[in-house]
Image 1 (cartoon, rainbow, N blue to C red):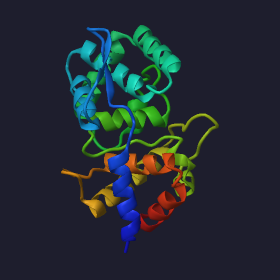
Image 2: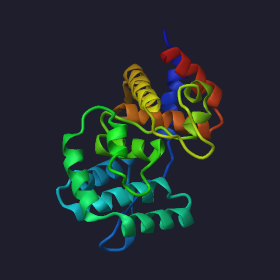
Image 3: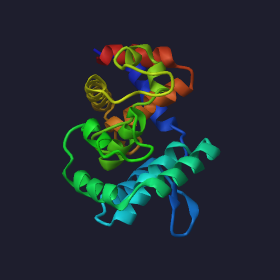
Length: 220
């Protein structure tokens, strides 16, 4: 049985998750501060699931804008680079794939060869924003937790996309689903895998990686 204290700590971390709730309006050319990550998810998901390629381009750009928000120089370079390099053919292919995607499908997303979406961290962000109810993010900060690190092969600066890492991503989604089921409710919302992953991220930020690792071992 999973420790109730550990689950309470994760539930508290979910509530305390403090990453900025921001997106960018490319028509108005200004950042928008939203009230919650649910609003961020809805905003970006609507763009990604559009049949309009310009909307999809904005949604993909917003994943980069949000993901790199705390590093303004890199954020602006990545967004600008993506928007200048991605072409209409890639975006049309993305529209078709996004509408039919099933399962984790990380390698399917990688085959789109979208600029700035080549490693697992940002492809998992893309998968999550396409369906926030079912998926979650994995990144190198989470991989500082030993049990998570043991599941992924990594390079110094990124997590590559391989068959084995896609299987490990599926493991991570399932584990976060177990955590979400165990916690059930935080505040007035049902907990989803994406919320559990953010809670683990927050625990790492709060220097509680040992607690996170212990809970992951219990859930595994």
